[in-house]
Length: 254
Image 1 (cartoon, rainbow, N blue to C red):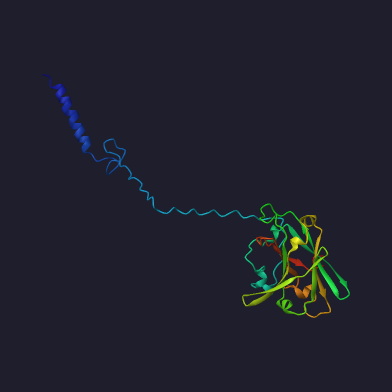
Image 2: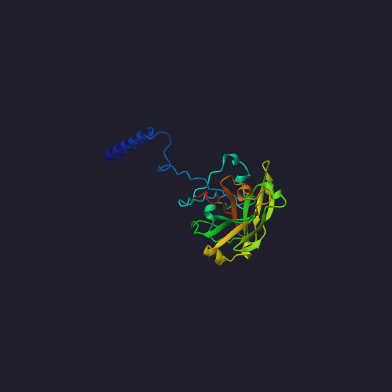
């Protein structure tokens, strides 16, 4: 019997033993993919069916800035931090003047004897596309006035009108932050002027003052919006839209 095959077998066996005795080149235990080592399976994911759902954080809506919106007049320093900045005194949050389809312009006062009429022309405009109040109706106008004008009797304002239809304003007071403010309301406007009249921009609303009476007998003495005008608010029927703006006295925007 030839010993050559046996010698070759023994040589191969010795080589295999020598190689297996060498430390692995990569160090430590063989990686999971090594053919001689079974892969390490990940433990199964256990989901609790009774666990509360993970809340979804809503994304912040993008801000919309109208580059064509008119600038908001500066608040006089003596009114900073006062009730002037929180008017109107209600839960309505849509207050930005830019969202309104209506605009007020002061008209030249007219005097007839002791009676002086201070009027505003209500015009329409196309509000920004993102305005949530673009289609609002007009139910009420409020003005921020001095509290002493609410308390005075008899009042210097004898009546109000819209497109010549006479009605009478109502008055309320509001107290907060250690201050007191007055509010003049011109209500039920929807029943006094039609939507088509508003759309045409041919609407005037007026207050009539008896200058022979003392107290708040002019618009400048009535309004509490500073020396430059009146702070006024449009309301829709549901009181969800209340765009508020400062309307300057006649002649101050000339």
